[in-house]
Image 1 (spheres, helix red, strand yellow):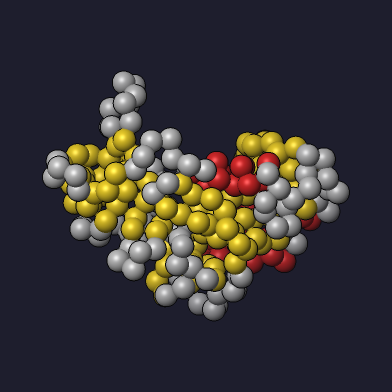
Image 2 (spheres, rainbow, N blue to C red):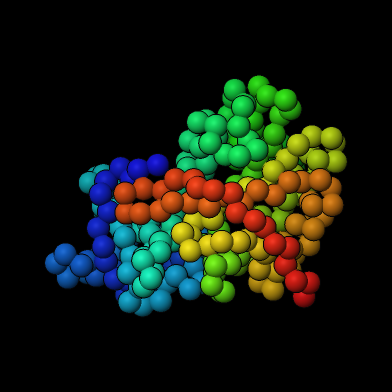
Length: 238
C-alpha cells in the first residue's frame, strides 16, 4: 500500500486528547496540529522530539491538514502508527494471495456481521473452508526485537477473541492475525501485564482452536506492505 500523498518529516511536540498531535515541520519549522488515528497508548512512540512522518492533504472537508502515519526510530527502523491502515494492507495482501496460510480463497469480504453483534474484519470464502480473520495492529516494543499486543486495555479486543472462539467451537476456522507495524520486530507476544483480561480471552480462544498468525511489515515513507510471517511466543504467566 502506497501513501496517496508523499509524506513529510516532522518532530513531535506533544500528543494529546488521543487523536491530536502538535508537530514542527522539518522543512520550514512551521508548527502544525496533525490527526493521530490511534486510540491506544502509543507507549514508547509519542515522546517529545520523536521524528515522525506526516501525510498532508488538501481536503476542504478536513479541519486538520496533516495525518500522522509513521515514527522513525534513531536506528532507521519505522513503526506505523495509523490504526486505519492495517486492514487496508491486509486486504490487499489477502486479495493478492500473499499471506502464508490464507491464500487460495476466491472471495475476501470485509466487515461481515457475526458473533455477539461484532463484525469480523475479513471473511474468506471460496476455498477449502470459510475463514474468519480478525486483524490487530501491533506497535508496542519494550524489549529489542520483541513486539507486544496490546499497548492498553482493550475490552473490544477481548470480545473479538471470544467471538472467534465461538466460531472454532462450532467447527469453523478462525484466525487472530497480528499485523506487526514495526520493522525492528523478530517475534511477537502478548503484553499480559497491561491487559490481563485480554490475555485470559486469548487463552480461551487458543484452547477453543483459534489460530494465531503474526505478519511482519515493510515500512518506509513510500508505503506499508506485508512481509514474512513472524513467530509467536506465548507470554510468561503473571
